[in-house]
Image (cartoon, rainbow, N blue to C red):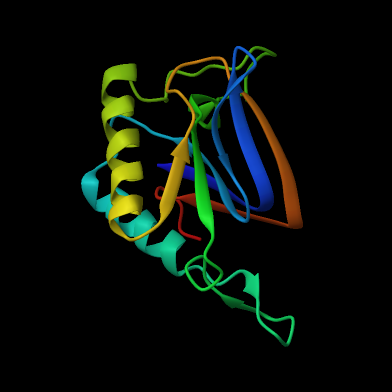
Amino acid sequence: MKVVLQRVKSAEVQVDDVSVGQIAQGYLLLVGIQDADTVAEIDYLVRKIVNLRVFEDSSRKMNLNIKDVSGAILSVSQFTLYAQTKKGNRPNFMHAGKPEYAKEMYNLFNDKLREAGLLVECGIFGADMQVNLINDGPVTIIFDTDSNY
């Protein structure tokens, strides 16, 4: 799985000019899933995201997690995180998960974030979405369960 996390002051996702999800302070998560991804990877990412300390404390140090600041999550599915661009100019998405499996895992990921006590708003899986955000920092963290960093 790949998740691009952006700390935001606010974020909103629209489909056909209609808001389908919006948050104030928190995280915008762009979520990519492969067919080989497992529930164990979801559990790992949920634990990392819930406990990630990237919000500033009173000393202006990144020392607080999303729960400490009563933040929320806007989760947006994004198969393009698995674009292969080495050859040619047109991205290849063959490493992205098949839609049925990816949707199931995406929904499970969001459910587990909710079970961890977070407010989670979502885009619509597979829809053409427009995402608006006010990036805070900017702070952007990339999680890749296939990576060693």
